[in-house]
Amino acid sequence: MESVDVVADDLRRHFGAESVSFLIVDFTGKAVVRLTTVGSVESGFEAERIDLFGSDYEQVVRNQRPHQEVVARGVRVIAPVTNRGDAIGLLELTLPTSPGGRVLRAVEEAARALAYIVITNQRFTDLYTWGKRTARLSLAAEIQHQLLPTSLSCETAEFALSSSLEPAASISGDTFDFTLDRDTLHLSMTDPMGHDINASMIATILMGALRGARRAGADIAEQARQADRALLDYDAGHATGQLVRIDLRDGHTQLVNAGHPWPLRVRAGRVEELCLAVDSPFGLLLPHTFRVQILELLPGDRLVMFTDGLLERGAATVDLAGILRNSQELHPREAALALTQAALDANNGELQDDATVMVLDWH
Image (cartoon, rainbow, N blue to C red; front, top):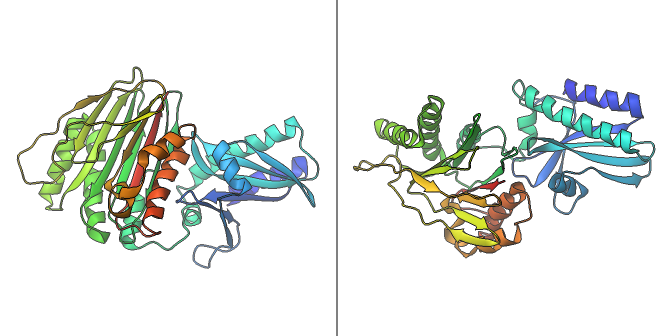
């Protein structure tokens, strides 16, 4: 937190700011936690959890624009702490007078700098991870979280991407991944069989094999083959999955579907199910191949990948198409959260299967 203190001290010194604090968005995307430098992870930090719904904080996270209002001791300013579409948190401070354009720009610059500070420092501390968690994790959940990318969102000139995972009461091991090369975006989503530690172990082998193959330069068909082989070699179990490779230069998109639900595409206000060929799940002891299929993406398209936690049990009543039509103007971050929240609500707040979604806007 020392680096955060440096930002606060700079704002106090130059603009007379008071009550400078950093609020981190929790893993669910439904709350922020105000972090302080008091205490330690072992002794217990002082922290304040604030629900986002209906708050000024929610508006800043959603529209990514600063908010200011007159309060008893001056003017309260909230600025987004964001990097490449990843809404990390918020910078909140009180200024003695209403900020002019120069001061507000300086606050926004400080918030952007804070985003880089948090990204850099989280490699060396559990503080930010602790702040993102509003409940103690089971061993299975801890493993699951470690398999996910460090950021849930990413933006470039070509696309905007965001994901949301609403875990079941007994973790079922859903994972997603993305990585960006010079000219290529790689996406994956997997859903192991079973629950709790067994599902987490399948997910660990699966994600290790997929990432290892991808980092060795394998195409998506070979990535699928290696993941399949790894589950068979360790007699781990099976899992469904989708692998996607998008050429950022022309939008050429390849997809492998290993027994996974069909993705949805939103184009010009119309939601359509992409009825692609479905190959066998990973890890089945049956003769099978993984076909590389071509998926058309046009500028303005929204691609939605998800696990069957959005289709089964109570979630079967959720109108996915309706939610996507009503959220067309929202950032993928908000659309993804709306889908997983709908699944949670339809199951009376307790899922029997993880509900995971990835939303990609192709520019």
